[in-house]
Amino acid sequence: MYWRVTSEEVSGGARESREFADGSFVLHRHRDADGPHLDLRIECGDCLMGWRIDACTFDGEPWATEKAPHDRRWLEQHGDAECVDAGLYRWAEQRPDARALLLMGRNADRMIRIERAEGLNPSTVRAVRDALSACNVEAAHAAQLITDGVTARTRAIERVCGLGRELDGSAFDDGLWRRTLAQLSLDEIHVHLRALELRFDAKYPPSPVSRPEPLPSREAGRHAERALTILREDARV
Image (cartoon, rainbow, N blue to C red):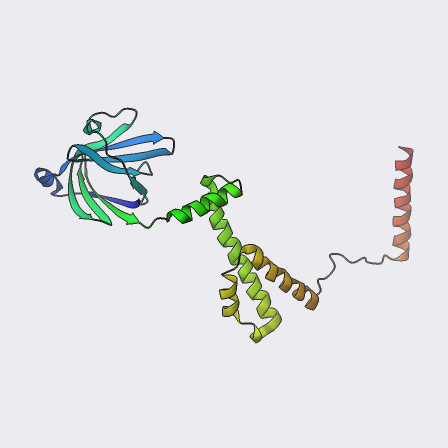
């Protein structure tokens, strides 16, 4: 399950809430095989619960995943992690899809809001991983490839519809074509695109890239003599 995290500093009166604290917290900055991140651990009974925040700060609404229970000794033991802050916390909101807690740290008080983000179901994750494996692409490039694929589809559909309007005028049903193309693969869209491009080229034959221009007879003789001179020099070499 993924969570979206937002944070803001709180001033004025928050320190008075310490007497109503729900427990202690610690905020670690850590690096593991998946990269640098923050670990927010809060005291819940005889263990620590919390979230792995996929960022080194709370800026930009980072995403987080729930952490497995940890021993309470991590309130004081930091291992290879850096202790960014520690203190007391109090729940401000507890709902299945949203949480909010006030962190009363050493130097500042901060309200942390954690909202559930809609994730991918297992079948979708498996389909994406199978596609990456079939294409021999690393998972880290999946997001860029999805963006590139959507861009390529959009451009191909726009070109199909543009050519269709040019060739068939009012007889071209733009909405119907868009609904039809939306259900096709990119290769299938390109089949329709190539057919329309052939029709377009037949209707509007492309001009030659270059046209030979006749030279005046005097100029032609001079250029011919120069060409022969170059050939003779090359032959001697």
